[in-house]
Length: 435
Image (cartoon, rainbow, N blue to C red; front, side, top):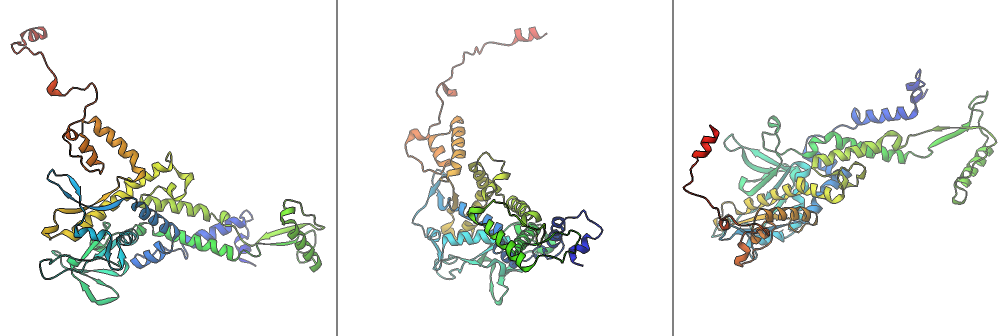
């Protein structure tokens, strides 16, 4: 007795599709489809490098981030941001070290943070001379192999080390640790960040198992079914002769050709068919994969329509979805990157204190409509032309009239209004009327 016959014994209402779907569900939820282990190596191997949806979402965030730019600014004598060029800090915006560009450093930081929940930067500092404390290069550290050396309750971080080489350690001021907050104090003591994939461990495991199951269905798809003589009072084993099998295969093959596609097959005997497998559609793999991808998009604050999920869109168009991705995910992520870069390169160096990095997205196409609405609001609020220019990332124009408030036609400044007020007027009559 085969396994299918065993499970169907006494239950004729269970179909082949029902059985295989239940078997697939067991494998995913209770069998080999176990959640990803809670460790950085697994998030890299099974998440970013092992799951197409995770890789695609993080790549989308990275690619959209590059539409903006990180720039160095300082406050001028009017307290306004002014773009700085020619400063030593600007060199980091091209190459962070001799073998890594700033673009790659930027992308690597996001990949580690969005995958592992942590990213680590290392800077070799100058220890003598007038430039003490400064650095000439930055390095990205492999987050899956970097560990925090715990200290005491006053100084919780004693240093950092690579877990594959205990002889090399780093002092706290040599390393900058970016992380998402992890409230699991008993597990991490606030020393490590929470990986987004930790929250999606079961989703990612299910997606990985769905991919493996679909691949196996293709590998084992031949032959997809068995044709046999339908029982008509004789035993099932009194089937076709070899000549009849050959003739039937030849007839099926000829009718599958382009010119004969759709024509009926005429057989001298009554046939029946037994499927040997179930398609990914019957198993529900495709629907499960789409649902998993949508949940991953929710975790990363990316509308799923940007991942070609047009059937689940609540946005009027793709531009609206892209603006939502910018405001909910990309801008906060890159503002944090710019703030952290400023602190790591300027903290404790008096010469660098006036300078800081900002994330400039003023030229991003999807944000122009939002900027246009903001400009309209600022005009109605009476902002000056220069204030509007600076709020949208543009430089000032040093003309006095550009600093004057804007009034719409017909509006009169309060100082130009005249009021005929009788200073001798009292309110005796008013009080009498009330009584």
